[in-house]
Amino acid sequence: MKKQLALLLENEKASARQPLAHMKLDLINHGSSYRFQVANVGEGVAREVSVSFIGYDPSVAGDYSSKFPAPSIEPGSIISFLAAIYMDSPSSFSAVVSWTNPDGTRIDNSAYVAI
Image (cartoon, rainbow, N blue to C red; front, side):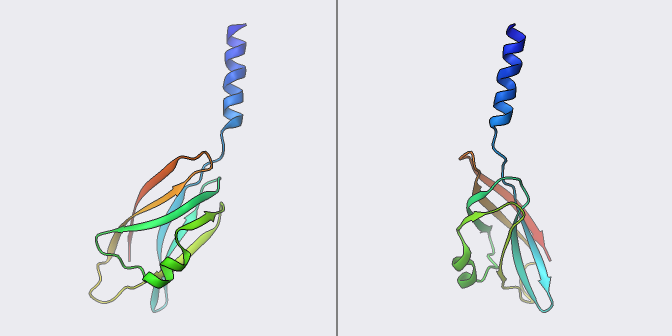
């Protein structure tokens, strides 16, 4: 009887878990310009999404600030913003993508993108 109760409780916990978001950062070449893309590749809605670059910040401030922090990004959705890449710019960038999962946990995920 105790085993059955334990299994029942475990099944209830598993079904009560909310799907989680997972954010991915990419750098995309659009002909003569570059854009960063922040994509939700998880199964849950990401809230309060932001990107912080470590060291050199190649984001175009006006474009970034008009879109972030993003109130929410649905699963499968993408938000892009301009990247200021010049001949003397670094060829790779480190960043932290931050968001809040549906269960309320705040996630800070390190990302590395390169040209």
